[in-house]
Length: 401
Image 1: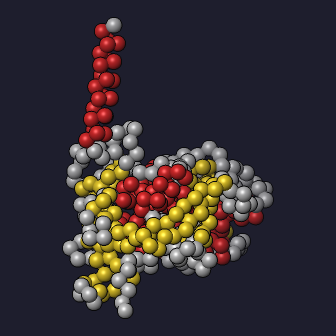
Image 2 (image 1 turned 45 degrees about the vertical axis):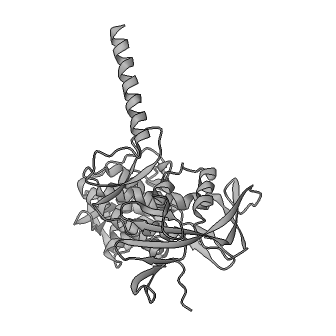
């Protein structure tokens, strides 16, 4: 018998997904292997199914078994969750099911910090997609989101006794981990009595001269001639060694290496990148990029975004449905359905926009051509108009007083 569960129907710009209810319980963490203060106990309820469908107008929707919409824009509701809020995330799971499919009656214990990081990655992917479609380019925001998706520690969490979820981690880091330090005096060039390595550079289209003594201090960690904040950071050391020695890699890997080297060498060595706090440097820093670095950043941002989405939709299986005689997709879980909603968005046509009401955190799906729609609902528009009106009245009162 053919399994009809979890099929996406692509007829007339539409797909559907069947999920499952789960029972959740938050407990205080006493496990030294978990980072978060809270852990989540998850038990599936195989008797209660959740039905979802997707349309271009309403996004991913929770529906009845027969297709009537209960809640619209599930992805928007997910994006609107307050950052690092265990209670809000748990409420989302209780309404729409868990990220992953659970075996019946099997209990799974999850570190909440991992789940929060999963939410951050989806939000970062969506926000980066938005920024890349904007007419006015915000390079600082693109830089922040791209470096978060690229440099944040990879997520690895247990789903069941037999399954583990692993987030996107770019293949360039395998290259960085395997590159070998090479100090060869035959590569030296001398300029004004100083020795340099002349390194082919894909961003600037010519060789870049790297001081030999600076490279040796970075690669050995000895700080004999150079000492600046972050010079002994292990990631910066690997990037610098790869920049000098690793030239037989793909063009995108070389672009990543060149960009990360120039940014850390010129703008500041990156200590950490997080979704909520942004880029943290070891010392003083700046985010200024020249035109060639900006051009490289846009290429890298598109690469990182595509890898983040492709990684999460790779388990989608195309199947021709013998019942409807239509192409279908079989999805493994709700997390894939959320990423597939991003995958299915029309570039330069649709965008998730944050509500302009300062007290609202909602995201809503809108056509990019509709620049006038700034509020998720009439209530938020009215509240914002009333706030502006009161502000104007106060200014008039002060001016007249």
